[in-house]
Length: 30
Image (tube, rainbow, N blue to C red):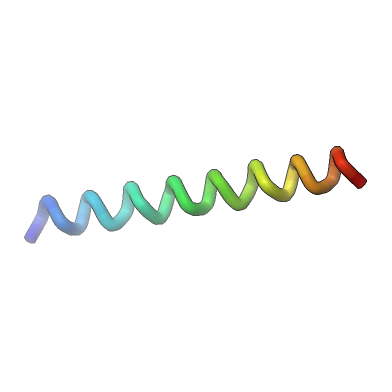
């Protein structure tokens, strides 16, 4: 169960970083 928890947190971090990159790109485009 410990391994699945680590994988879950890693996925969340990746998702958040993607969202931040998208926001930066949107601001640059605008």
